[in-house]
Amino acid sequence: MREQLEKEIVRLKRMVSSLASAVETAVQQAVAAAAGPNSEMAAAVIARDDAIDRTEITIEEECLKILALHQPVAGDLRYIITILKVNGELERIGDLAVNIARHTLDFANRRHEEVPEPVDFTEMVQLVRQMLKRALDALVSRNCLDANEVMRMDGEVDVINRRVIDRAMELIGKYPQNAAYYVDAMFISRHLERIGDCTTNICEDVIYLELGKIVRHSRVEEPE
Image 1 (tube, helix red, strand yellow):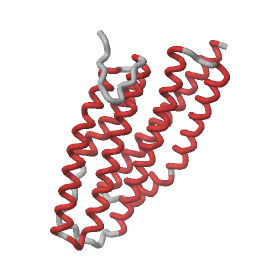
Image 2: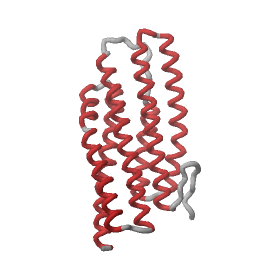
Image 3: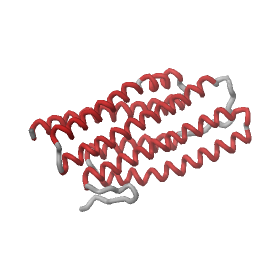
Image 4: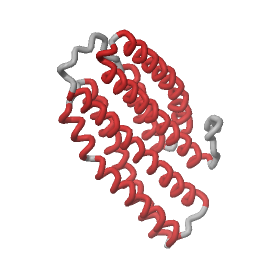
């Protein structure tokens, strides 16, 4: 039974790795499409969301099957619980990438509009993408120090999001004819900020996996 459990956990790791890769690609393409705007790339992100949803459901079913058949304890139980939680966060990140892509399509449909002062998402996009990559690496390596560092970065994303929204609201007053563009920009900023939040949640799960501690309202450093 132990050997079979180990085989199923290895299979589960591969499935989660595949989902994480698909979600990371979705985020990268969604933000690249928004920078264009590139309607074809945005539409591709939306079209692939069903595959991400199906994988998320499959992983959840596998976790529940392992819990029912093997009744794992200690580290194995903690791993399955962690994967269930990370699985949900990855699916939510995929949904947020789709939301960004949908607002990008709105951008593309209004190409005839002259936007005198476009919103610059460069700093926020770079930070969020870095957070996501480092969080997924921390999950693989079970590195609590890296996870904590990513969580600290989330505060920077929050500050940038507030700055972008304030600027967009200011520009709506200045250029009311471009209000629809700036509203879409605020939504994109908010979705990027939420991706940062989900990434932080993944890092909290990494710390739970490695240390067995819930740090939802605090930060825990890896012991020496």
